[in-house]
Image 1 (cartoon, rainbow, N blue to C red):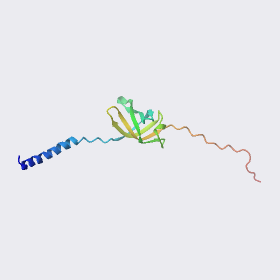
Image 2: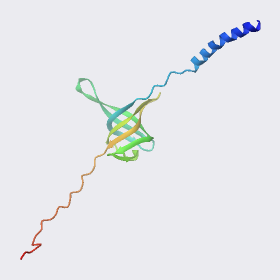
Image 3: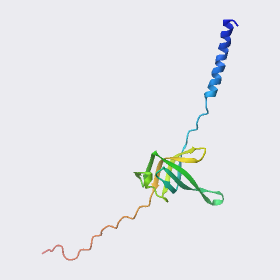
Image 4: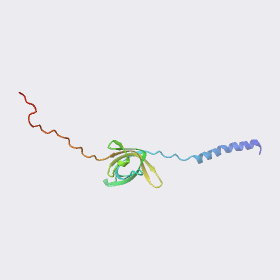
Length: 144
């Protein structure tokens, strides 16, 4: 093979090789996690691991409702507010109503909900009754 034919053969092979390499290196784009809101009641909470289970009511056929447990993960980047005050997962109690904003992360073993913002509603004790002024007896002033 003369040098000119060898050069033309290599020049024709190079684009084909680049195309095959780029196809092999390309992976389908990872879908962007969409942020969604989950509203429910705390069924379980493990502050040590950041895991929380939230029971969500869902409408079912025939006007009935059914519950679904959503497995959540509270990370160090999550913002937790209890009764509108900044707090932590350690103060969340079973039975608290929660509004969570986050995204679903699909794992081969389990689907979990990664929490970015948590608004927790805890019942507050009733405030103490105010001291009412006692009716005054006697004369505080005398006019003459």
